[in-house]
Length: 120
Image (cartoon, rainbow, N blue to C red):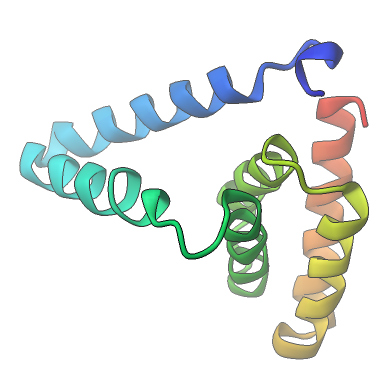
């Protein structure tokens, strides 16, 4: 889906992760290895929930925490893993109950930006 619009989300994700790990490794190579093992090779490989559900959970958490940059990344991840636009919006709407309207509205604005970027 995303490659049709000229955006290869998987390549973008790999590049973003490689850069993040390199930045961490500059400060502490051991921490970078721990991050890689725990998050990338650990939490993201668990099979209790599928990757789409995991990304939608991340969207909810990051929206409530008002962490816009990783929120946008995980919105793309949700789309990359099969979430519909309606599912992403519904998760953001649900965050208004737990995080309040200001963060939900901020999340919706981030979603608008992601939609433009992806040509949705």
